[in-house]
Length: 139
Image (cartoon, rainbow, N blue to C red):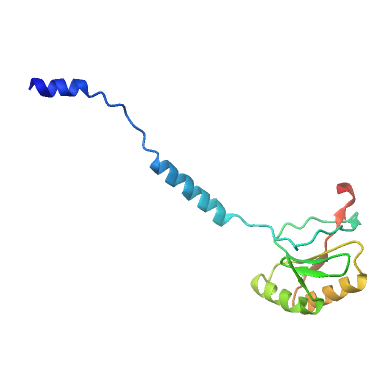
C-alpha cells in the first residue's frame, strides 16, 4: 500500500494538449475555402481599354474574349483565330446560358476585328455581348 502511494506522489505528469484534431480542422477549412472560391478568368493578354463615361460594372461571371492591339483574338489564355470564336463561345454559352459575353478590346484594335468578333459571339447564341471599357474616373 505504501508503495502505491509513493508511486502516485512521484509521478507528476504534466498535462499535454493534443493538437492533431486542430491540424485536421485547419486542413478541412482550407479545403472548404479552396473548393468554394470562384476564380476570376482572364483573357490572357494585357490591353489598354478605351474610356467611357457611361461604363457599368458587371457583377456576374462573364465569358471573356480579348482582342490585342495587333488584332489577335484570345480566349482562356490562348490565341485563337477570329473564325473559331463562334465555336468557343457556343460551348461556353452551353455551359452558362445566362452569362454575358464581354469583349476586352485594346483601344488601338481594329474596329473591323471587334465587329467580326461581336458578330461571331451573337451567332454563337450569346444574347448579351458588350465591350469592356475603363471609366474616366479610373484613369
